[in-house]
Length: 469
Ligand code: MV4
Image (cartoon, rainbow, N blue to C red; front, side, top):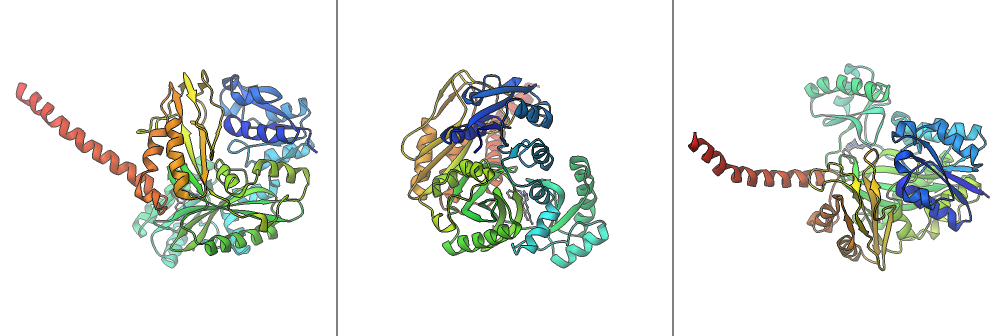
């Protein structure tokens, strides 16, 4: 039904949407900043429009420029990808006002889930399990102390307009809470222009498990399993997998049933993900992402669905092309996010790719716009590729990933590949038990071990200096 879709994004996700559109006979329009003139997704789209300079604020975040491009090229719909304007209710409204379909949920659903206090209230109403905490936002330190007494320490204070880990403070006692509470509020005010904060019991050692779902315009919702995204550092996921190896079939089905019933009540449409913390066999709602996620390919491989094509079909007004009972896992899939960065310091490493060789073979998928000669811009996210492997068992998928990463060559820049390969060999990864803070602890231990060696190396040097004095 759509003849032409404009993709309001860049990089591998723009390419992912182009590939989905081509197979559906839909023409594509790429939009790009001047920094992305030579990007692969621009070459692969049927048409392209330069929408501004390198700065995201003046290009990929500029609603008027993107909507003008959609109008000029006569696009029927806009796919926002992830990040940028993908969870911007105002953008969705503006498109609607121009008679252009936003491929995503309604502005109301985006807004409701974007406000974390509202989202949690909604989760409670819909019967989704949440972490014990404050009823809504907390205005005063007196209220904060009272709530902490009720739920017990440790507690976490989160910004209502935050999300993705920004604007959080942890307190283990009254003194810490008295100190942290005003800081949390003023930081929230500066970062989001909204000083509302709320409180939850702090879960010390959870896993991050998220449920994929998609709804159509007829009130049907299907959940498409879960992903384990616990391998992360500073809220940047590094390895994701589906299914979550530590869940029983019953735990997985129970939480999916809760999510499906809740989202049907909400009449949610489009693709979405509900993020949970998982500790001691229980799920706790964290937030909902009202968009396609970076890690969607692992779900696609395990369940044999094309999430982008399904997003497009439901936006066109079709019923979901599959039923809940069609959703069965066929394999285990892993995704490694390859970043152009120093694998030890995590400092971004933009530059020109001199030579590129992508891995391949049975059970290997690479989502990337890389090519030899491509100049990785410094002004955007450092993720340059996603390597996805899938096999009948988790162990096989891990082995496959290890060798796929060995085959991969990205000359001219540093990448996270050596770190990924190291992680694939760790016992906590191999047995699937790794919680959300595991990687940070692992890196810290590694750095401390390295410092020790450096100090030892330094001693003779210092001694020499002293002697020569
Ligand atoms: C928490 C938590 C522990 N207890 N909430 C971080 C991202 C944001 N979505 C919420 N986050 C957390 N909320 C309670 N009650 C720990 C985190 C958290 C986290 C969660 C998932 C993945 C990575 C994380 C890293 C640090 C903290």
